[in-house]
Image 1 (cartoon, rainbow, N blue to C red):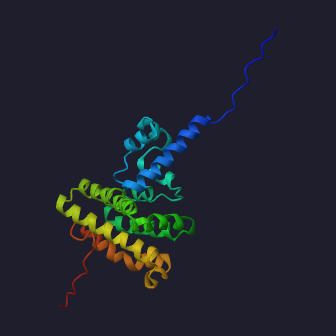
Image 2 (cartoon, helix red, strand yellow):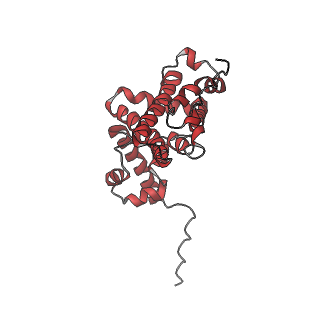
Image 3 (spheres, rainbow, N blue to C red):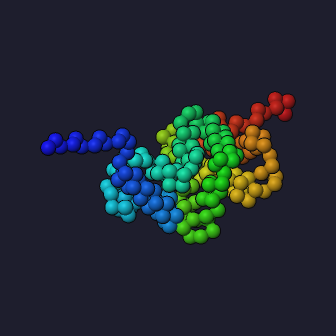
Length: 218
C-alpha cells in the first residue's frame, strides 16, 4: 500500500503565532490602561502572557511600537515624537509642534488619540497619559539636551516646559476644543504658537529664540 505524502504546509504565519500576538496585544492594552505607559514594561507584559520578553521584541520591536499596535494607532505619537528629536536643536520646537498638529489634525488619527487623552478621568487613564508624557515626550527631549551639553538643571527645566506647552496644545485645541484654538487652521496655528514653544528653550539654546536686535538710535 502506497502511503500518501504529507500535505504541504500553506505559506504564511502559523496560527499559534497569530494567537500569541493577539494575546500580547490584549495584555499590553490591559497593562497600559491599568498601570500607565511608564510602568507597563515589556517584561511585565511578557509575564502576563507567559512568554519570553524577546518574543514581544520579535513581534513589535519596541515599547513605543507595541503601544501603537495595542491601540491600533494609525500614527503612533511615541514614534512621531522620536522621529523629530534628531536634527538641528534650534529647530526642535518647530519640528515637534508641526508633527503634533499635523498628526492630531488628521481625522484618521483623532478619534483614537482623543480616547486615550480623555481616559485621564480615571486612575488608570491618568497614569497612561502622565506616564506617556514623561517617558515618550519629556525624556527624549531631556536626553537630547543633555547630549548637547546643556547643564542638567537647565535641561530638566527646558524639557519640562517644552513638554508642558505641547500637552497644552493637545488639551486646548483637541480635548477641550476651545474655539480660539480649535478653529484656527493648522499651519496658521503653528505659526502663531511657535514663539511660545520656542520660549521653553530660552536660555538653553539661544538661537532657538533669538533676541530682537537693539535699535542703534536708542
